[in-house]
Image (cartoon, rainbow, N blue to C red; front, side):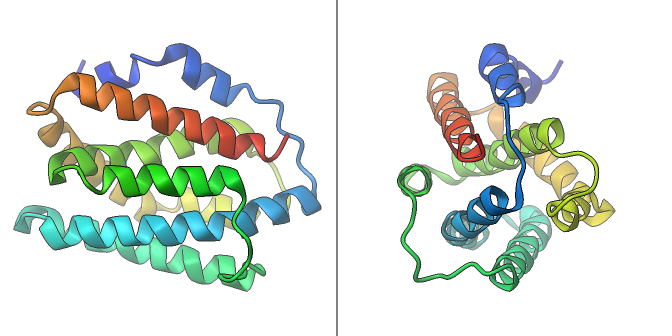
Length: 189
């Protein structure tokens, strides 16, 4: 078992609670959730730009690909009616503040957290989204082979970076990321 699996294993109850949220899917609720995703994804874009700026050469291509996926997601969210000037829900503001706080950490921490931001989101997505519905286009986006390849590269890079980090700091921020994922998905309750 690698360190990434060990770290993820620190939160079995939180992960299970995230997967077990009683999400209620309807178009109005999902549309609001998507529109509120825009400011977070915009903040994630800035987070990724900072990562790419500091990345060693070997990490640049995968991070550039991840950045392009984020740019495409922002474009897609705009096409779904997101308004960059709209008021940001307090839950989304809180998650953005967490991203900004993590941006002050060194590159290896930020890389590991970027991997887990994606991993935990997809854990919830895969637990809650199935079948046909307004989420179908996003589901295809997340399950596309190109995106899966980016996730694999992020996992490999995070595995290499995680070995050198203070595990207490990592566990603290992973707990916060999981907490924020739970709050974000709870907007669909």
